[in-house]
Image (tube, rainbow, N blue to C red; front, side, top):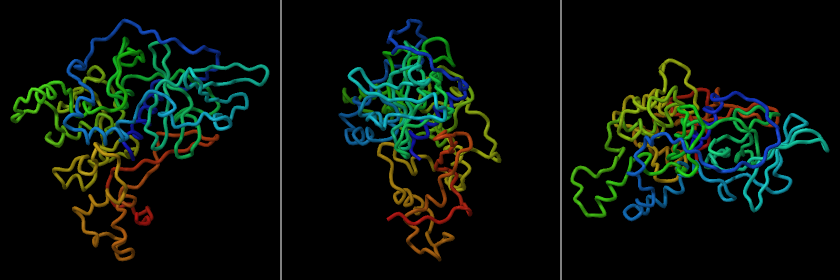
Length: 409
């Protein structure tokens, strides 16, 4: 699955843990946008960060391609272009199992809004909040956040691009209107480049509303780039030090940790201020991802790195990394392109279904050996039915119960 889809549901699981469901349907006006002053000392060297556009003079093709990736699009400010859901009359209503509750999504000159309407006419009450931020590139769906002064919360209604409809957000109980799910720093670390937290930490949801960077930027994987840019602007010979982190030149462990920030699990506890991790440093100094029992039933959601490490492919390949199959600078490949990676090591004749399907299987190794499996920890409440979404497992092996898929043409 796409990186941003993992990140989207990781945020939703984190916030479910942060606060249990509770109904809320009181009338409330759209909040103001004032900024509090008690700022926590900035843990990330923002003065040494330059932003993606500073990379363009030397890396224009990579920057242009990266702007189309799920990582870059995993969070954005909310507008008609970034929100996948429709606000057209007739398609902007989400009915719930509670006959006295429905949600309405509206767009006007002031912005995009989500309203919970409770009661029966004419005796109704409502609560309206603005869609301020979008989480998710739209590969599977999106979730939406709103500001209440400097506090950041999740809205109860999301959008499924698979079902093409507004739905209860993952983990939200159908028939309730909960606007009080806080967005804690650990959630944002997997969805954005930077947010400046305000007190309290690490579980608070207060942020500087004028100091944040949406999407996953170049510097989340390469580290602060100011010294690198200045060196090349001044035409100073780089020698062996280009003043930037190239994950491909890190050790296998450090390379994996760049991805493990978000794809190694939700994180048990923060060991350092949010957003302070810099690629190339040991991740365990910054966040405790929790113990991993190799014999445990590891859920397919949000544990791509852990599952890959269980694979024989990884264990027998000392140089294998996430970049062996994924080029994060480009939009995601199709399954046939990924399968070619498999065939760089494996002979097609060794496959158990080669005798039946022949060379046609070369187009899709992935659906057999890395199938989409149901998560046991994430659920959607859609039309009164609980659905467990499927994610692409990264434990590469033979799955006897999986029917051989038709090859991709």
